[in-house]
Length: 401
Image (cartoon, rainbow, N blue to C red; front, side, top):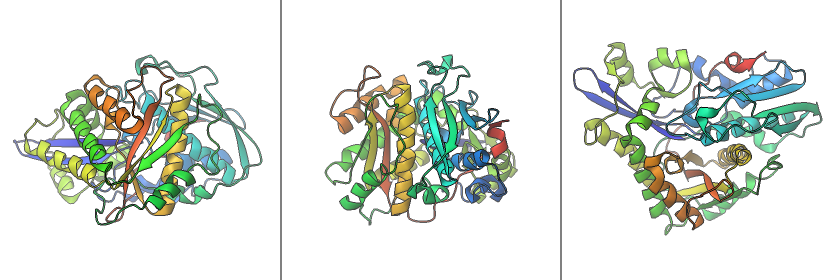
């Protein structure tokens, strides 16, 4: 989901850089990354174990702030147990853990697809020890899912897109409209062959628009909600603390918000970064960042969304639907980038949370877990250049064996 980083130089100068994560990593802003940091996108080279191979594909899943918040327990034979790394959550922008669980759903869908590609079927049981509490602060180590392997497994056509999937975090080409027919393919194709939804409390709905009359209000929503995240110190500092500057930090962490442009590397080499505070409104850093927010919003050539109830099951299944939708976008050659600020559930965002539900669903924001909820909201369009892969942590760092 879209995130920003601001860096204040020692001695009073400033630079600003922005990046995104969603369920997403950060690529185009920072330039290309060290090969070792993106080696996951080459596939499970040298891995022969069926479960490890499947997990190696699943770790490419989109996830908030590129935290990669997965712990994968392989200690039980023919079983994969998916847990949450509680050190990799977002208490300020995601206080209910909803976005984190959407990231788990994306991981789970890629895992099931990767097993099926090897001729292995999956029985997926969510919350085998009960659901995680509603507040992130009360989470414990109970698993999100228990996946039991069994013979069978039918390859999914979308699996061919797994290692090609990217999240574009640059302005889209405003000279290229997204055709209504392509939008229909995007919404329909993502549901084909999906092994999703058996435990959802109600059907999840996928919608979208490319209609010129509907785009201005949605673009404005994106920009205005992004400003709230920028101007709320604790949410901005959450992003700043996850920023990795230059190849050394990127290789050390291989997560978070990666910046690797030549200028950033040069300044970093001089030890001239102060990441202790967000930029002040009206400062050069603030204005630069607003320009990027505005560009992403203004160049949206359409929007897609996923709606449904808001139980823990629904959040996980939203992630499964979302990654399929992004794989379908990859197959169609169109870019898809979460603009999730308006969906964040912290107090300062409440007016925009209300607004996104009015615009998308024509009704007030949800008051209970059973109410229709906008779970994912993404801009679509055509990138103007190559979209690089996002760093991923080593497979071994996520395994319990």
